[in-house]
Structure formats: C-alpha cells, structure tokens
Image (cartoon, rainbow, N blue to C red; front, side, top):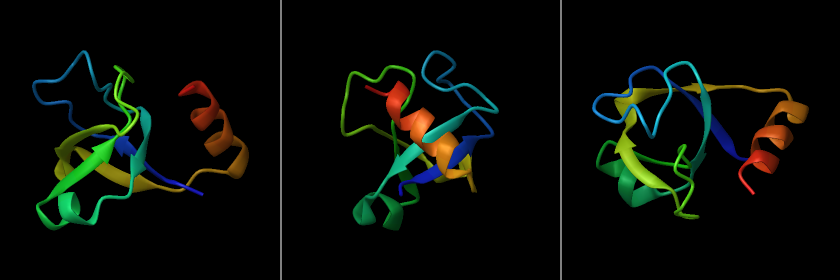
Length: 75
C-alpha cells in the first residue's frame, strides 16, 4: 500500500492542505533527500502531487479500508 501522512502545519498553503487531514505521500527519493515530500493535496490537479517540506507532516498508519477510501477519493 501507499504511505500516508497527517498534515500538522499548512504554512502558507491553507487552500492546498488542511491541518489534521490524512494525505497520500508518493515515493520520491530525490525529494526526500532534500527534506521534501511529494503529496497528493486538496488541489489534485497534478497526478504526481506537489512538493512540500516534510516537516509539515507526520507519518500515520491507517487500516486498509481507510487507505482504500482515501485513494478512491483521489480519483
């Protein structure tokens, strides 16, 4: 399954990220080596997600049914 994170700070992106909401984090080794995470945000216009500072998120574990529901809502 994919990795999921919870937004703990939306910085200057209140329209794109909601504090306390779970988001899907896409794999991106280059971004992660630079302290960034590739996130499917509220805009959802980019299928490849957007880059945000990793410090804006914490990793979370979700039940499989919740992961499927979040992924289905992206489509």
